[in-house]
Image (cartoon, rainbow, N blue to C red; front, side, top):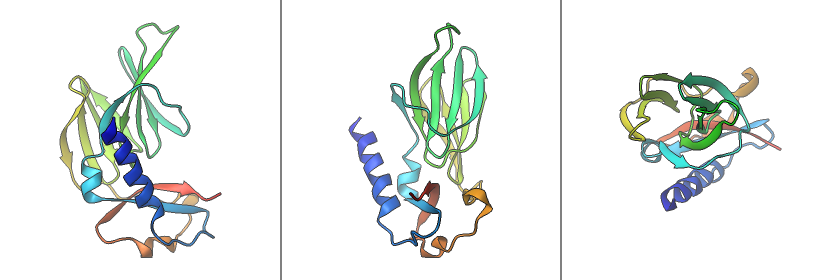
Length: 159
């Protein structure tokens, strides 16, 4: 649990410690390569579903993508009473697929295979995907201020 809290603090600092133009509608959030590579983890307990994406069913579980955050794990053994059991933390996650007991997901620019039984990463292939595009097909000047060695994992809406 301490590691998860530490990771969330690092993500928060990484996303807020750089000087970006706040007049743009979104702010890019970056993570260091080192932090990205240790970021995919299973976390027990339910999380609120806020910005969901793709849904995948692999009996008896339902997997629901939480855009840029990871994947909700829902036990659907009793369809009348599904149980949100946990969350697979995966910064930059937009898409996923399941085959047998392996969840394939994007962890920002990397392709990760995650063993659902062992609840751990079994393989990572670096730089398979492009970084997430800016929302609404906007162009951003913020990307020129990218810290060296950091990867774009999320776009946060400016309030």
